[in-house]
Image (cartoon, rainbow, N blue to C red; front, side, top):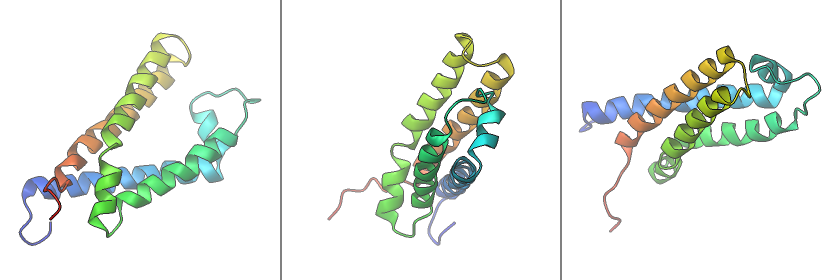
Length: 133
């Protein structure tokens, strides 16, 4: 926690850093080991892997923005995080309900995305919502 910070901000910062770490780790795996990531969720062997690499690099950059020393840049990364992760959570759950993934995979993806949604919600505590001078 920074001098003059609050426990709420400290929790938000911890959530922001953890969310960034998860994004960077998952993005790196998608970029460097897309077949491994695809197998984890039961993607067919013959499915293209380029989307994993494509989203992997984006995920790494978004994670890095959450760690920026520039407060404004961090805030720009935190603001859409809740909507991004909530939509991921809903997509994972709907995919399971529609039978697009196995029950086990759907539960795993929904739990992971749900955790990221909670972290994104907590990270919002760090936003600087004061008007610019």
